[in-house]
Image: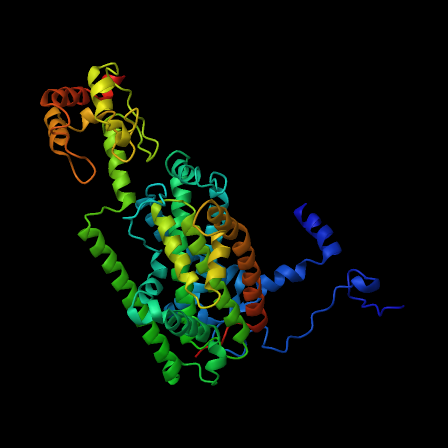
Length: 223
Length: 291
């Protein structure tokens, strides 16, 4: 029955080439850790994506309980952490995953750098990769404020002061991110929106570009 | 308009909605027959092997998640002037860099643009700066050594920043809030007062609220200006339930001679007898007695 359903859709949308393209493409031996243990360095990109998926899923569950306002934000996180079933696990995954994704991405960047994989024709993919790196750092920075405890508040204050010291544009950047002149209610809602809508949207678009380019150009050859 | 019909095609499309046949890619070969060794299909062969690595990482990750709960301190207090700010660990190197005299203050432009901006832009544009054909890192001494020096600098700055933070904590005798919170929470649960949530403490009711010591003496001495009109706390600490924390002698001494920077001595303002009575009344303020 599934076969006839599949055929029904395939006749109309011609979906076979899409998944065959993903499934059938060859992976060369030099990146396969089953053949060369040292090839595990080629896994960091995939692991970054794996942790990113964990971040997106755990984040989706966190927003079911999180309330982005200065009175309730802290207590909603406290409730989530201590009262909600598996809340501590989900928040723990999001908290530690945020660090782990940076670690994995850093290792992936170093692998690409030291194997010279960013060289022609893959220059554009390196740039997209660096943009993903900056988006990830932005996600880390905006997400850090959301629990609205002292650590979050003062880290953001210091971070925005640093942003404010950028020559010429600093004051504008700072006010834009603050949503006013102080770190307060506006900052929290703004950071929440940036953290859950703007940056993830940008991240997904960049990831799509990253993967399409890898597929188009293939993995760089052995050294 | 007549289309040429491919007799092998399952469906004949008409008009411009025809799905185009894939053109041969001219960028690189679609397979890796040019590379030595055994290639294999992405799904399922390779993905299963990659999943093995993923599982090892996932298990380690979940062990960390279960062993170390995500930290949560006290609610943000913009008036707290003694809190030591600390960005997340991967920003520490930048935070530390911008503390040095030649990267801050009058030299902030150098710090932001020269020491942070230019290296980041260089990294972004690396493929256009390192344009040679050579890929092996030991044959690209400039690119590799710049990266290694940057890595060493990042590691060093992160360590200095963290070390400085630990030093500050020790110097000021500060326990990080998320740890202190857990300690207080455990104490609260042990005492049978339930889970402790900062800012949501249950204030015990007042014991013997009609006592002269409170209605007259404490009003006369203006205790309530700092400790709150219902002794719920203000500039000074809450006095409800103070009997659980302090003995009568300690309270007597605090009123008589003052305490810390905030509490003035009331010796002379109040008679010894009045202080004695206030201390006695305060020592009766116990959470258990209030119920």
